[in-house]
Image (cartoon, rainbow, N blue to C red; front, side):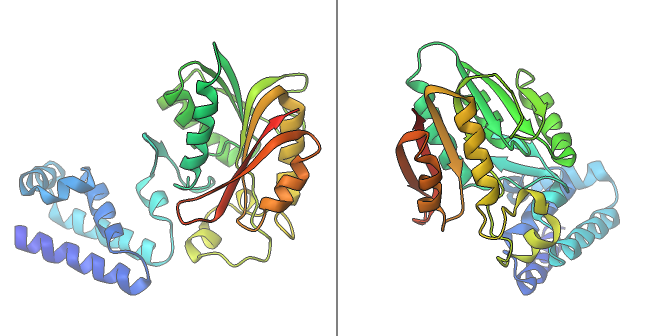
Length: 284
């Protein structure tokens, strides 16, 4: 059984490698089929118990190979498993919502440091919340916050509601365009991950063919939507309020220029490989 299982998994890895995807994706898919964690694939007893619980090895094999074929055809791994991991969270994702990226975790860290400097409750608005990754990371790691997640796309809102109901029901969801959301409201912190990819930029097939274009593309140069988010942040923030916006690696100068009229102490932040990834500023 163990030898057969190892050969079975090896075949899946070879298929994904040939399709240009990391072989570890095969481990994630098989663990998903068995209903165990990827690390538990190294425990023969756990595997045997999982197979016995399902009761039909043929069903396991057929399901695994179908998932391998879908991954080889560029469907995102997170859509296939229904799960995306972000900081300490396990989020539900699927068609209609952007898959959270690990680069965004760095933005959350900077925002959390700013929140720590506050005394008392801190009001936070997440513009373009998507799956709720940023919102819920802050909600669970900074209990002194009151959060509002703003999202206009109905498909994304469905996933946002699922994650909020599972992780932190205190988060308020507002289905609205950022340009008109929360008229008259003032808050301490605004976070934003707008669509910012230039319209003509070529993307990996799993992104281009499956993830929602409305959450990806920001106009001819990628700056049309970020400009709207910066304007909304300036409207929403109290004087002295903190703003953090993710953007394209080619945009730090353009973002800083757009922010300069209403913000000070503008800083560009880099991701782990040294690319400009997000910018912060303080509302005048």
